[in-house]
Image (tube, rainbow over all chains, first blue to last red; front, side, top):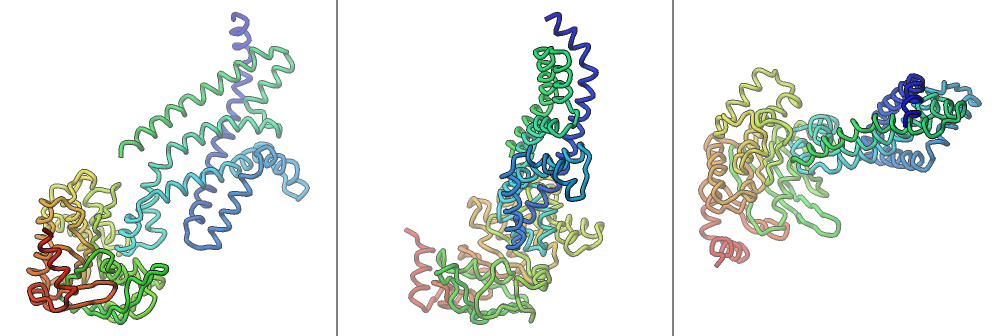
Length: 217
Length: 243
C-alpha cells in the first residue's frame, strides 16, 4: 500500500496530462455528437420522407461500425484520400460521429414523447414547423432527454480511451506508457481506474439530479 | 364567413364525413351536437387545417382552407381553436401561454401584447394566476386560460371542441359562463358540445350530426324542443333523460 501511494505521487503529474486530453476529447466529441444528433433527429421527425430515410440509414450505418474502426478509418484511411487529420481531430470527429447515432435516437424519443395536443395547439395559433419545435416541443423534450443524455456523457468519457488506439496520449495511453516502462502494472492501472472513476462520479450525480427533476412532473 | 361545401373525409377505410355542407355567418353561434364518432370534431379540425379533407371545399372569408398551403397560417391566426384537453403549454406561465401567438407568430410589439394578455386573463377571471404554470390550475381554470389564449390572437371566429367534456361537473359552469359572454359580445363561434342547456340558451343554430352527415339543422330552440327527424329525437331523448 505504501508503495502505491509513492508511485501515485510520482505518476500523478504525468497522468494529469492524459486527463487533460481525455477531457478535451470527451467535451469535443460530446459537443459534436450533440449537434449532429440534433440534426439527425430533426431530419427524422421532419415529416419529409427523403430526409427521414436518409437520417435513418445514416444512423444505422454509424451504429453498425465499431468506434475503433471508425477511428482507424479517419486516422489511417483519410490521408490516402487527401484529408490529413491530427490524432486529436480524428478522435473527436470519430467519437462525435459514432455517438451522434445514439444521441439522435435519444433526441427523437424525447421529441416523440411530447403529447400530440401540444403540437396541435401550436399549429392552431399559426406556428410553423420550426417555431413549434423551438417554442413548444424542444423545451419540453429537454426534460425527458437529459437523464439518458447524462448516461451518454459517462459512456463517452470512458470511450474516449479508445482514442489511445490512434496515438492520442490521453489517460489510458499515458497509463500504458508508464506501465510498460516501469512494469508497475498494478499500481499504474489502479491509479488510472481511480482517476476515471473520479471523473465519472460528478456525472453520475448529475444524471441522478436530472432523473429526479424529470420525475417531478 | 365559414363555408363548407360537400366535405368528405376518410380515415383509412372509414368515411367519417360524408358530404357536409354548412355555413357560419359572422357573429353567429353554431352548436354541433351528435353521438360520439359522428364526425363532429373532425369538422372543426378540418376548418383550421389540423386535419385534411378528401373532397369538397372549405373556405374562411373566401380563403380556401388547404393545410399544405402557406395560407393556412393566415387562416389559423383568424380562426382560433379551444381543445377538449386544453393543450396549454406546461413549460410556460399562464400569461406566456396567452401571449405566445401574438408575440411569436404575429410579431406584435411586446408591451401592447402583455397588456392585452393581462386584460384577457382578467376577462376570464384569472388575473391573479398570470404567473402560475398551467399544471397548478384546475381544469376549469386551464380551459379559461385556453380561451384567453384563443382570444389573444384577436380571431374572427373561435372553434370549441367539446370544451367542457374533460371538466369536473362543478367547473363546467365557469367555462360556459365565459363562452356565453363571448357570444353576447358578438364573437363568431362554432361549438361542438354535449351541453344541451348551453346550446338551447346561447346558440343561434344547432346542427345535429350522425354518421358523417347533417341529419337535421335549425334554430336552436326549434331543433332542441321540437326535433323533426327520428334520429334527432332519439339522440336528444338519450342525452336529456339518460335514465
